[in-house]
Amino acid sequence: MSPYAWGSVQRYFEQLFSGWNHFWFQPRYPHTLAVIRICCGGMLAYVHLIWASRARDFFGEHAWIHRDTSRLLHAQDWAWSWLWYSDSVTLVLVHETVAIIAALLMMFGLLTRLSIPLVWFLTLMVCHRQTLALFGLDQIVVMLSMYLMWSRCGSVWSCDASLRRRWGTSWLFPSADRAVANNVVTRLIQLHLCVIYLFGGLSKMRGEMWFDGSALWYTIVNYEYQSMDLTWLGRSRITIATLTAATIFWETFYCALVWPKLTRPLTLAMAVFVHAGIALGLGMVTFGFIMMVANFAFVDPNWVRKLGSRKRDTTC
Image (cartoon, rainbow, N blue to C red; front, side, top):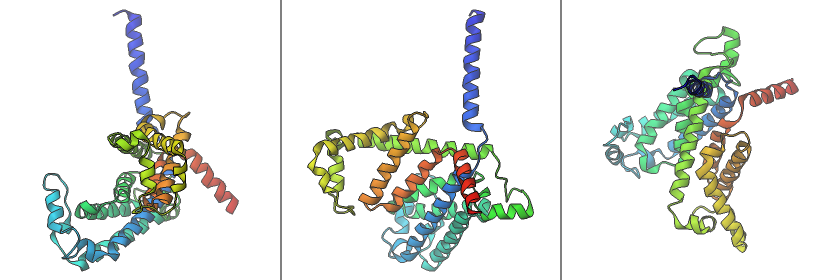
């Protein structure tokens, strides 16, 4: 190989390594993750409140899904839950009470280094117990809390920030400066979303109605989910077909379109449109909201930080 060709190959790999290093290990502010933390913590408190309010139906001796059934469903994997071994509603209520408190601590940003791992673990225990009764909301909040616990999302807009100013920076009260951990967590959330949307789009492609353009119509006329009468859209078959095609195109190619700066705003705007439609049109308000929160991971933390500073200055 000639020296010129070898130099070109060397420069290529240097640029590739530099890009990889910048993608994963460029320090990042925690402000975007702080917004996700607040929303996810509030949603976790809501989810556990619902589970606690129907504890006998979800976990009792005559639960909709018996604990032995849940255990058998996980016989071939590494999942585990202490809820497989008890039908005691009292113990479940203690579990849920602790989870609600931990979720509220996560939302308000108090001892987030401890409260986020705790609420993640307690939620995971319920998810492994309620395998057949899980909703997309449950899976997304577990995913977000799993990643957030490794970041410094509690270092801003939190009680931890106030305590840090009083007692100084420590592991329990980390600084709000740029950190590699914030970037790694952000990238993991972003890539996880790409995988979710990619396989969601590919699975829709297996359905005939997504190809003939009628999937959206059958969705809005399904009375099981309908919370808003959108049947007037059926007056225009072209509109129904276009929205159906746009949805499956966006979901399948989200993983490619969300990265370039040119197409990212449109891709995220489409995410808001789709999930707001799910929330308002199909009555899945909590799921639609948490998916919009997850998409917020693609928002520049520098912009969020400046916006937050501007609002604080205006308030003062």
